[in-house]
Length: 223
Ligand SMILES: *Cc1c(COP(=O)(O)O)cnc(C)c1O
Image 1 (tube, rainbow, N blue to C red):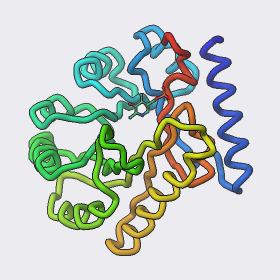
Image 2: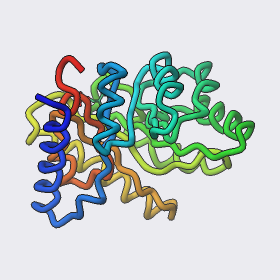
Image 3: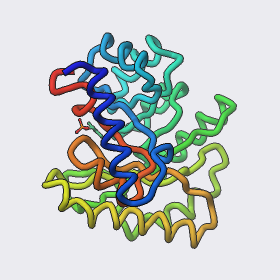
Image 4: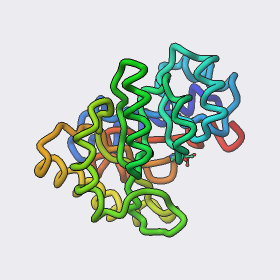
């Protein structure tokens, strides 16, 4: 399938999912996960109206930032503290899950003279292999982070287990619930809910995702 067709199909499905629950498709941002894609495919996709891209390995992410500086880059993988120094060009980091990382990003961002947008990664599946905060730890952690002036917590990121799409619904409901609680308790504007991948983005949208992270469905299996 061509990239153009993939984009068209994705947009159509997003629109349908939104319609089912009375949402506006403009509320759902597409993050093209390019980790398995080649540079040419990234370039082509950017010509088709996709502007935001996500990478999960810092090495490749840095190369891509250099190659495509006009695009919006998000970091979605687990991030070592000693790699934060390479993150200046990112628009958003989706994988904040510990104080040391927050502190390092805060210090670097101060040097860079900007605030970094970040999402708290929540381990909604409860699988030991997955990164992220336990749901019960999210609120107290978010509260602590309020002292760090150079990071801005925009919301939450989570991954459902890899199961039948329809069965992912409770995981997304859990994340949405935490976001609502956080908004109520801390009074901030947590407007980003990063959930849904190629397998389950339609369910995630029905449950309130404002950003979906899709790789395979856009680039194909090969990239
Ligand atoms: C790879 C990856 C995705 C995209 O996965 P697809 O199934 O290819 O859509 C989304 N989020 C994260 C954190 C990933 O690592």
